[in-house]
Length: 132
Image 1 (cartoon, rainbow, N blue to C red):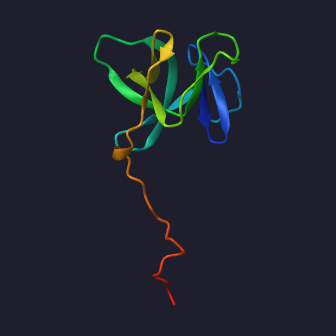
Image 2: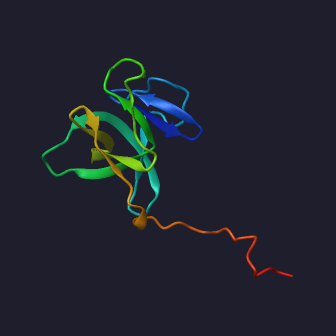
Image 3: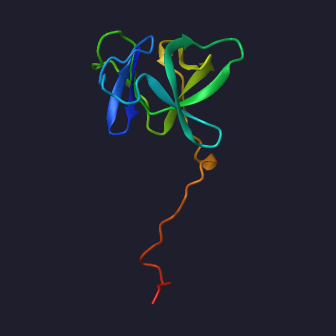
C-alpha cells in the first residue's frame, strides 16, 4: 500500500513502511499530520499500515491524506480518494503513527462539523454599522 499526503502546496507519496517515495526534497519527510485534542496539528513519523487491532491502542485522527493505493506500484487509476472533509484513523505506538486498514481499505470517518469552532475575524463590509 501507499498514501499520498498533502503538505503545504505540494504532495508527498509514502510507502508501506513509511519511506518517502516521491518528492524526496520535502520538508515534512515521512511524517503525517495528527489532530490533537485542542484542535491543533502535530506531525508524527509514519510507520506504515496495520490491520484493525483487537487491543486497546491510542487512536488518532490523521489529516491531509489525499488518496491511497492498494498496490505497491506508483499511483495510477486504482487509487482511492479520501474526501477533504474526512480523516483517516490511525494508532499511535512508540512515537509513530500506523494507519488502520480493513478489507484493503483505509479506515476513514467524516468530520463532525458541530465540534469545530470557526473563528470569524471578518467584518461584513456591507453592514449598516459603518465607521465615520
